[in-house]
Image (tube, rainbow, N blue to C red; front, side):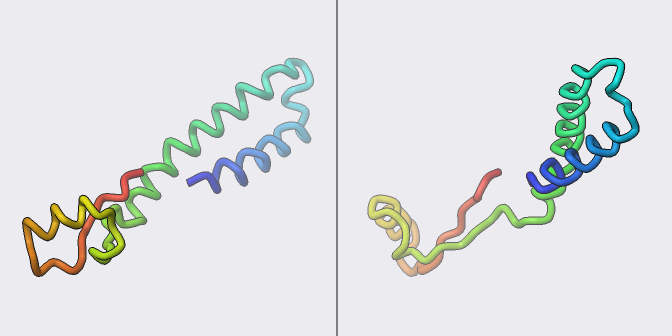
Length: 87
């Protein structure tokens, strides 16, 4: 998710500085970069959430003891649990 912000923003900022867009207002560089980062995150976050599956699996022996006991109470034959990875 951070790749566009770390690659495109410096590249576009460098092009803007080479074309002397910040000569008159050098402090405009920071708002320009912040706007580009926000733009990248606006599109990169939903795209990455859509590309990478949010569900993950784990063997029941790898989870915490209290969660394992609860899961086995509900379904004694369970060997795999599923969970949401979140963002």
